[in-house]
Amino acid sequence: MTADVPADVEAVLTQLFGGASDAFERGDAETGVAAVTSAASVARHKLPAGTLRERLLHGCERAERAAVEGDLTVAAEYAAAMARRLAERT
Image 1 (tube, one colour):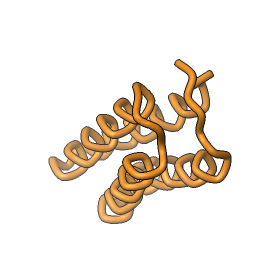
Image 2 (spheres, rainbow, N blue to C red):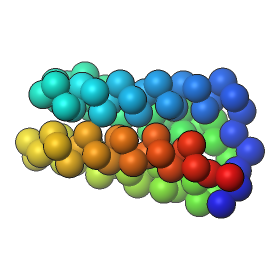
Image 3 (tube, one colour):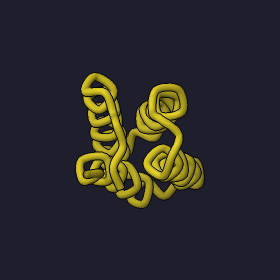
């Protein structure tokens, strides 16, 4: 899956996904959800339509749902998986 992702957008998403994963691992659901929500907004508005954007949006939704349901381990893994997906996109 190849997508043209501007370097600044990639950097922001990588930072947000990493921050979300770290926050969830620390037990800080509020910060993690805020980072995932921000990442979803960036993905929705800055990534070209396609598979990468849809997968990242799906992952953000799942991470947020897991966090709201109290499963921060799952939320952290979703955030980490999205960072990996972004890094492996080419």
